[in-house]
Image 1 (cartoon, rainbow, N blue to C red):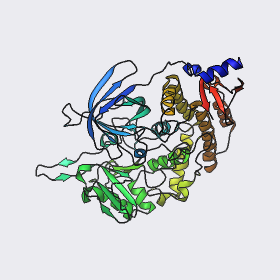
Image 2 (image 1 turned 90 degrees about the vertical axis):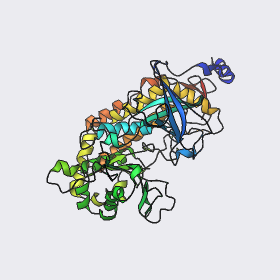
Image 3 (image 1 turned 120 degrees about the horizontal axis):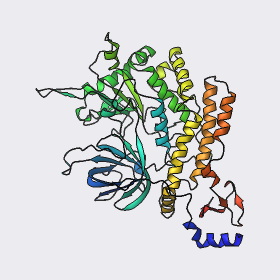
Image 4 (image 1 turned 45 degrees about the vertical axis):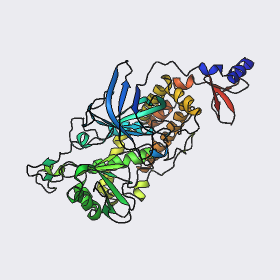
Amino acid sequence: MRKLICFLLLSGLLNLVSFGAETDKLPIMKVYFEGDITADMPYVNGTMTLTETDGSLVKLPAKFRTRGATARQYLYKPSLNMKLRTPDYTEEADSALLGMRSCSSWILDAMAIDRICMRNRVAFDVWNEFSHLPYDTQFGGRNGSEGRFVEFYINDKYFGIYHLMDRINRKLLNLKKVQENEDGSVVIRGALYKSGTQDILNQNNPGYSEDSSACVIAWHDAWELKYPDEYGGQQAWKPLQDAILNGHSKEYVKKYFFLENLADYHLLIMALCIADNWGNKNRFLSVRNITKNINDADPTEADRRRFVITPWDLDTSFGGSFDGAYYDGNYTEWPVNVLSNNAPFPISPIVNDAEYNKILKQRWIEGRQGAFSIPAVFSKLEKYRDLFIKSGAWQRMTDHYDKERSRPKYVQDLAREISFIEQWYVDRFLEMDAYFGIPRTQDLEDGIDKAHKPHETHKTHKSYDLSGRKVNALTKKGIYLTNGKKVVF
């Protein structure tokens, strides 16, 4: 038997064996456009085809460009912005893709540095379940991106698993549209700002970009105007400038922000260790209507002038890093109190405030029983793990990039990596409890034990060494046969 295994391994015949039954599928998305993929690629006209899991086909005109300051370094698996257009490409065209809300602007996230290709999605799933806008919208108060996974092709070349996401925009957050008057003047009402931009290279001094769509408000504190981006200028930027330049007091923050919204964001960064988001980057601030009076006697009207914070780019969550360096049980160790010691605005003025910290603790008590609970987080990780493996998509992607000279970051053994991340999260969960002074209880211990029972996927995940001996975990360097595939560890 051992000789037979070794023979089949060396001959490559066992590569025909796949992990699990292909009972699930990922939609297939293909985009077509002319020209090469470059870091500074502008929007180019093309088409998008999407084959849903039931076999139905969607084909739409679209424009594409490369995106992301870091993502542009990984053009062998490029991230793209996609704008759906009318047949003549002159206007935007909304469409509901894969059951998500109807919109024209989408993101095709390559996840080139995320070795498990799901951190951003899982973190947003946790956030969307836990936190909502402090007001009603037609999207249930959702305050984060929604997304689906697809297998992706560019000009018929395979690029692996991608994350199709909707954008954080005016429609999602229910911001008031610009008022255009008959005399040609405009009144800006809703405003959406995104922290961090490369549109202004010299960020030592305050100032605007040439078209005023970006602004350096203070030293190395740069923002993009995401809405209304066509009306950049003093009218649009003044609310944010006032907040950052004049708002460094807890009284200001309590007046102009929703404390529970800030506490929710604070907990997301703490609990999921989102190391690339605790500074002044990867977040949105929005105001529903900047023309409203914060001192209005009607609290509903006053609330329309308050800021809301919305997270973005959560791909360094769960112990990950900006370059994919941490994996195989070795993860980022930012302490849970990172925001307490070095918080950005608007959390910095209230980080030691008794009222705010009471809200922060109460929200963790609620979250640890719900979206942040160990079973809830595990179920999200395992849902995508099973989808990737059972559909065969993970095998196809790793097989493809194993042959390429340049490749993104990934792991061969996804199930093993997820089990390490789950153990990391248990430790993080207990650190959070310790930070808030929540004692360990028997029901928590029982929940942790239950969460760590072997899963079916792990049971069927078999590895053998070259002598044919079964190996429960790959801990020593060597060549192994894992579910019919040669693995070098």
